Amino acid sequence: MADRTIEDRLREEYFDLLPNIRRVIEQLEAEIKYHLPPISHTLARHERLEVTSRIKECESALGALRRRQEGGTFDSDRPELYSLSRLRDLAGVRVLVFPPSRLAEVDQLLCEQFSSWTSDPFRDENVLGHKYYGLCPDASDEIQGEYQVASMLTGLFWEVEHEAIYKPTPSLKGVARSLEMQQHSQDVYRALRNFEDEFERLAKQEKSGS
Image 1 (cartoon, one colour):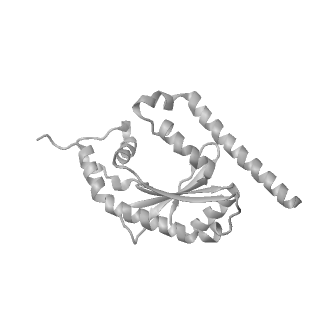
Image 2 (cartoon, helix red, strand yellow):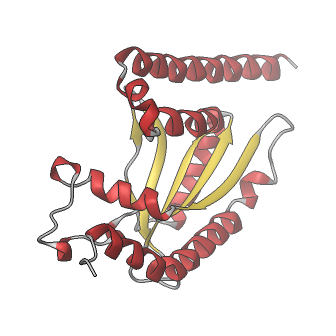
Image 3 (cartoon, one colour):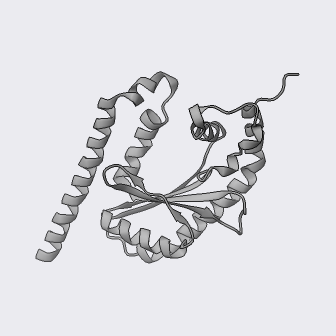
C-alpha cells in the first residue's frame, strides 16, 4: 500500500477535530446570541440583525491551509509541519446588521464580551467588516473560533462573491484573476456603502422633521 499523502493525513485529522469544532461553534453562537438582545429587542421595523454559523468543510480547510504555504504546496518530506488546528476559522459565526449605525453598536457590545480576542478586519480601501478570533476555553483549548460583524448588504454580496471569485471552481479561475472583475467587485462595495450612507442620512432627516 502506498504511503498516505499529507492530504490524507489532514483529512483524517479533520474528522478527529470535528467534535471539538462542533463544540466551539455551538458555544460561540450561543454566547453571541445571549449578548445581543439589548440591541435586537430595540430594532425598528426596517432594521435587521441576523446571526448565522458555519463549520468549514474538510476540503475547504485543506485548501485554506495549502494556500498559506510557500508556493501553495505541502512539503511531502515534512508532514509534521501541517495541522488544520492552526486555522482560525474552522468554526465561524457571522453577524449581519442593517443599517451601519447598528453595526457599530453590535461590534462594540461583542468586543466587550470577547475582549481577549484578536481583531483582524476585512479591508479594501475601507473597513468592509470586523473579524475576531480566539479560544472558547469551555469548548476547546485547541480549536479557535472566529466571529464576524458586517453590513448585511456586504455580507449577502459575500455569499455570491466568495464562491464565484474568492474561492472559485477550477472552471472559474479566469474570472477570479480578471482585473476588470476585481474592479467591478470594488464598485459593488462602494455602491452598497453609498446606499447605506444615503439611507441613514435620509432616515435621520425624516426623524428630525417628524
